[in-house]
Image (tube, rainbow, N blue to C red; front, side):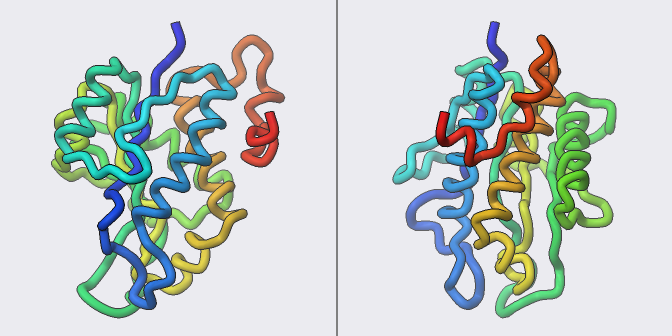
Length: 205
């Protein structure tokens, strides 16, 4: 039985969230990250379910229901963060939300596996990277659920990274690896070499 991962590219077509200078839009980033992560997971024999199409914007409850109907083994929502109400801000770095403690709960084990892979990849991770919020997509999902804020689109340095193609590949690879670690998928049946496949290689396969 193949493990099932539900990926949730945040927001949708008419969402205005983005950088103060208009050069970056969260919903476009979220969709692009989904498109990079999905083939990496599929390479490892993981089935990927997605909560929306490129041009739809389902409600938060609908997103959770898609995951539940699919019987997903985990749910990963893809976002970038914002601080302050206008202009560039100092806050930067990656963080992950789950609904609640304890840290031994599967959702927090998933979050920790992801944080470990991001740190290993050299991604700037916030000092206390795992926080808890009762967001709808985290509460209404039956599977262990996380919401990744890959960086702040209100921070100049983070935006430069979030817009960078190679950096997105790095984020996608670390995300896929963290999910596989949590699922116990990576490295079994002598597949260690395959786990190291890059996004570029996966695209060619």
